[in-house]
Amino acid sequence: MNPEAQPPIRGTLVITVEAGRALRFQRRLPLRRDLLGCSTPFAAGDAVWVTMRGGDGGQLVVARAISAIAATAARAPAAPADEAQQPLLREQGLDVLWYDRR
Image (cartoon, rainbow, N blue to C red):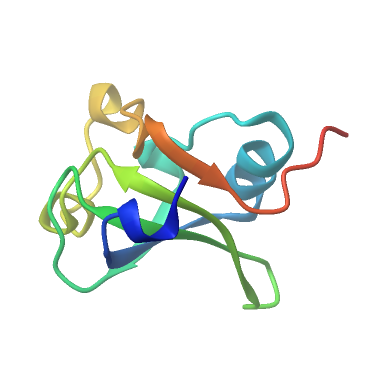
């Protein structure tokens, strides 16, 4: 995609390392249960960075994507079981960095 045509980044979603690896290697969308946190206010439909956080606290940017949820929903207390299965991202607009088919 042409960088000038991309919407500006409005925030960051932080997911587990397992979900980050699944996104990076299998293009499997992370679910709400995989969310560790987020930054800055953003709305569903906004462009976000997706990062994964490892056990040592290190963080790696995995993708640029369109969020399927708002930051306020991401910061809400633990989601009920049905919401835990909700995808965090939209398939359209997903740009996985360093995609690798292992």
